[in-house]
Each structure stands twice: as structure tokens, then as C-alpha cells.
Length: 271
Image: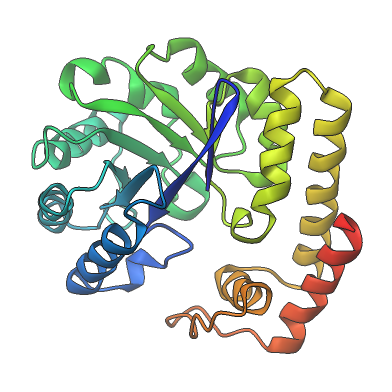
């Protein structure tokens, strides 16, 4: 995961999110993962941000308190998705309640409408949120609505970060005002995304577009042959050489052959 700040790219670990299948893990499993990342990432990562969202506000607060105890650098929270908030005000109140359990930790709203089914514009959620949550520091925006993202950028406060999470649209988001990027494919194309961000920062839009187009070509192929969290996890294993294990049901495992076909496409595109 990369965050662009002026002319530097710093490494951040964003854990227990979508790629980490947090909603399929128990509270204790999520705590253990956060502890290990903090311990092993010390001195290697500039920041560790832990997602503590849950269907239960009580569990979210428990995870937020734990995150503060182990010394993470920030927490993120996604909207509940079974009993959904009906209004931006209801969602803000939920976020405020979770943030109150760790009032000194930088707090980020994780906007992921495609997964949560909560289609409240992120800009509506941000209205007045800095008064409700003094520790609020920004949004991980993983939606396709660039107008909504632009409205968030326009409203954004100087102390906030806008982290964009739709990998195939990153360059557009950078133009609008994204400060950085959090994406699942960056686990294996991170070096190319770093180059994209650097090219954009240096005003080289030709190079930035070339890299963005390559990622779009890769993802177009991956979606055509089949691409989800399980496939992405197996692809990460094939490329890194690390055994990451199978996904949790109901996500189905991916065959090595399937992931290898996407890996070979990646190699051919970015060669």
C-alpha cells in the first residue's frame, strides 16, 4: 500500500480490510493479526492502520480499544452492511461511537458501497464530521463515483488524507485530489503504482497514463477470466512465493493454474 505525500512515497500497512477478509474472521483472530503486524512491521513500515469495522458496534469498539493498546497509527471503519444505516446522520453516529473508544487515534472512514450496499454519498457522511470526531483524519474512498470523490476533496480539511481504493481509476483520483492509494493489486504491482504516482507528481502525465492503462488492461483480463478475493489471494501467493492459505467460505479457493494465467498476463503487460 502506498501513500503519496509531496514528492515522497511512504509505505503503509492497511490491515484487516477487504483483502484480509476481516469480516470472515473472529474478533480474536483480528486482534492477533493486528498484534503481529505491529510487531513485525516495526522499523519497516511508516504507519500501520487497522480496520476495526464490524456488524456490531460493541465489537468495533473492542477492536478500536485494542488497536490503541498495541500502538497502531490509525484505525478505519466501514459501514455496517446487514442492518444498514438509512441516513448519513445514522452512519456518522455509528462512526462517532466507534471513534470514542480510541479518541486519540487518527480515524478514517472506509467507503466501500459495492460491498456494503450502503449507497449514501461519502460527501454527505463527511458533513460536520470533524466536530463529531476530533480525531477524524480522512477517507479511504473505494467507490467509482468520481463526482462524490471530488466533492469530498473539495470539502477536505488540511489535516485529512483522501486515499483512493479503485485501482483502475487511480490517476483520475490523483487529478481530483487524492493524497494516496490503498489497493489490493498493489500487493504485486506496487512498484509500478509508485512509478505512476511519482510521474504524476513530476507532471509526466504521459508516463502516468501509460502505467494506468497497463493496470486497466491487466484487470480487464482478470475480470474476464474470473477475479475475486480468492483469486487475488492465490495470485499474491503465486507472485510472492509465500503460502497465504485458502480464503474463508463463502469465498471459494482459486486454482494455481487460474492464478498463473493472470500472473503471466501481468508479466507480459509490464515487461
